[in-house]
Amino acid sequence: MISVVDYGAGNLRSVQNALDSLGAAHRLVSTPAALMSAGKIILPGVGHFGQMMRALDQLDLRAALLDRISAGVPFFGICLGLQALFESSEEAPGVSGLGLLPGTVRRFAAGQRVPHMGWNRLERRAESRLLAGLDASPFVYFANSFYAPADHASAACFYALHFAAVIECRNISAVQFHPEKSGAAGLQVVKNFVCS
Image 1 (cartoon, rainbow, N blue to C red):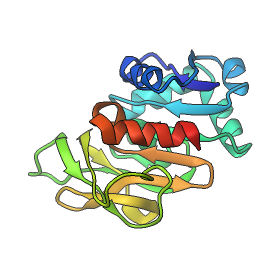
Image 2 (spheres, rainbow, N blue to C red):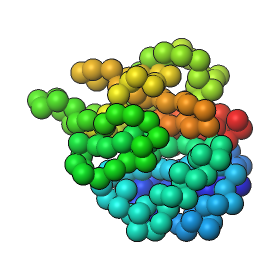
Image 3 (cartoon, rainbow, N blue to C red):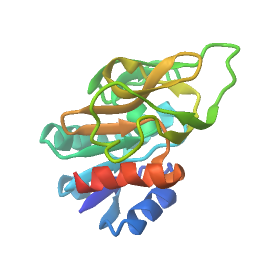
């Protein structure tokens, strides 16, 4: 069973619609106990880094997430769910991320139009299970004002600079774009996670 983390915000309905279209059994979870029985975990995210991390802490979900990921449960972060993997974000100084990856999420430079919104091309940097079955450089839909470093990326995107668009590390997968809003290519990404 796929557990979709419900922390009171995020693009839950569109993620659920994508999972429904794939016939993937899932449920919304908002307690540590419910998360502990997850077969796979999806952390969708829309909004503010600080608000999301504080909500996870208020629901006591941070420790449960870290425990499940450490135990090898497959994890899929979407947009802010990717940024949460890092140590911190310029969007919320002083608020800790999950710290599973080193580095700080940064805001696009002053003078750059934000949010970076719309369709943009992925640039593959490594073998990718999430992008299996897709063209070499598929177009996907972004909506982000902050970006993660591309050091750990299996695919990057260029918007004034290269940033992480797809991250895959052990049982951790995450995308900066919104697969649930990226048409057939995005649905394939979700399917690749569901079927992995």
